Image 1 (spheres, rainbow, N blue to C red):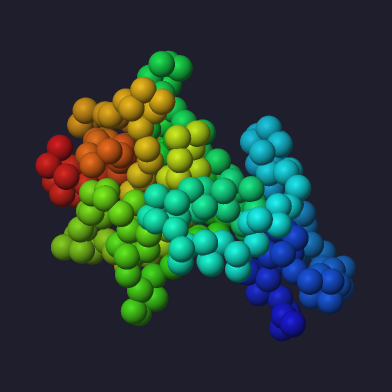
Image 2: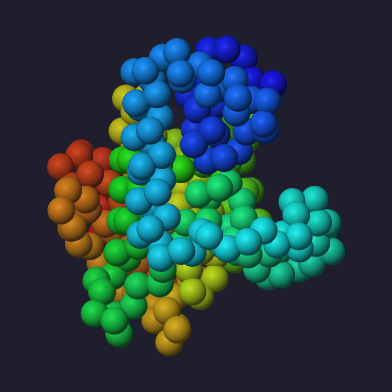
Amino acid sequence: MISMPPSVNDLHAYVDHQLNDADRRLVETYLAANPQMAEQVRAWQQDAQQLRAALGGALQQPDNPDLDPSLIRQRRKRQSRRHLANAALLLIAVSVGGLGGWQARQMTFGSGTLPMTDAMQAYRMFAQQGLLPADYRVRDDGDMQGWLDQYFAHANRLPDLANSGFQPVSARLLSTDQGPAAMVMYEDQGGRKISFYIRPPGPRNYLLPKGSRSDGELQAQYWSGAGYNYAMVSEARDPATQIIRQTLKF
């Protein structure tokens, strides 16, 4: 049972319909007595509804018993790395985390979309707007590279930005039409953010040449290697953008 007053995480769980009936009633009682917080929660609910609408109903699919977390864990023990990644894709795309099935739809040159547009969209949604919780957070004994290797075992290693004060702190699994994708968030002690994004190439196995581009307030450095496309995204005017260029030798 949650404690009262509810924490921010409890309120987000309420918005995402992740509380049991008893906890949900406690939160509703609290909100009825706190109009200012109730207004904030309603704003979160509206954001969630707009996100669902933008995804064209992708999150409204019925529960699938084959995607029960305990069954998926059993499959992971039996299956190869590739099968594990496919299971993770199904888990993300259909069931886990309420809004957690957000899909970063594949962006291809054939459709006229600029490279790694989905990486910038992911940064806006998770780093700037904070709409969804992370799937993985680094603790004192955490290993972000080990977590990423579960789904992208043969991909390039995570960029090392430690000398510039940036450390990987959280990650989010996503899905594309070609398979699972992920975004790893780096932060420094000042709270500045840089994201690392990895996804499969397009349907024609379209790998990217090393390049850079801006989109509004964001800057992306992108490249390909080991069968995947990658991007590092940051605020265009943030000095962190220069750190990325130096680290990746752009």
